[in-house]
Length: 276
Image (cartoon, rainbow, N blue to C red):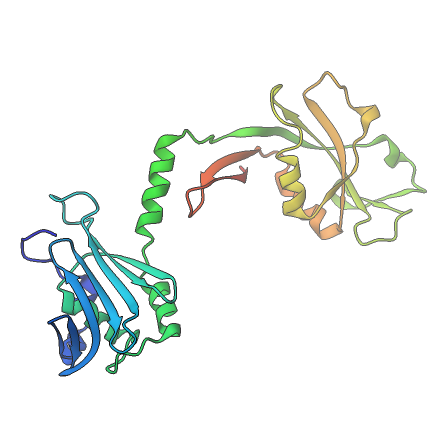
């Protein structure tokens, strides 16, 4: 770790009463208010501290200081708390003195003055302070290693259409906004509307249509093969669903719909639906 004056973690400075607890690290022991509560091992040069149960000698907490591989830059240094039994890691920007890391755990009730860990407070500690530094670095590296597709499976020129079979008023009842009720169907999803859209010649006809169906809880009730030209990149089909869902789905009329790749929190490439 750097030998210059250490930068105190901002949240340590924020609490003046954090120094109310007396913490001392010496002779491979951690004392709180003059009472030895943990065994420990520390390597200041390499920047790590291991904390052990004083009775069972089981390793409980591992604290590591990381320079993030940039020894001359201070702003990206961070601390890693690892709670081994709970399999929980917490990463926070900044760094301080070793006793301050213990005091911070006391302040947040992760440990008490007797050296007992609180599982529920550990989870809360992670929820509040974990900055996912390693995950973000992996995402950045993955993004640099591969070119994500920002726009593909493009569905454009989306229109409401008329359908020949709707002329049969004994089978279909016209409602507002070119939505029809299938009179031969008694289910809640008996409502229909017909749309057309264009895809580029090399695009997939399955997506983003499948994404739209999932988003609006619809299904293709008729592919209208007799009204489509197999050589054309314009498609016409009938969608079925509940009345309220069809009304909501009409938000895509006149819009461009497509898929876009993105990296999730684990750095994995995912695909999302975009409507604009």
